[in-house]
Length: 75
Image (tube, rainbow, N blue to C red; front, side):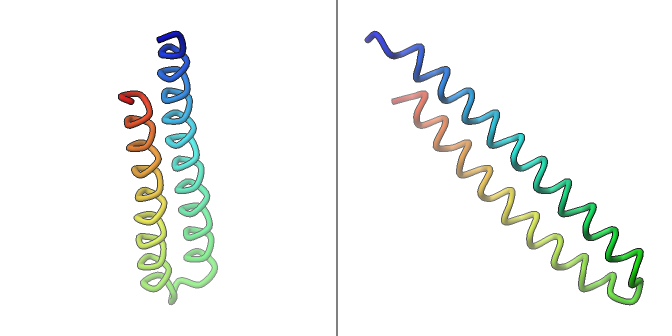
């Protein structure tokens, strides 16, 4: 059981990177959507819908990564 600490360390780093990546992705997504809404106010509804779908996909990937990190820590 020599590598148990490294497994926890790897899981923690992986979970942190997944959270940071999701935060950066959603931040860039929101900034781009707001920029598009400012440039073309008539397209606000379409942009908002697309932004919400993309944010959900980003969150899904982040959640999947978090679950993998938890499984890695518990293994």
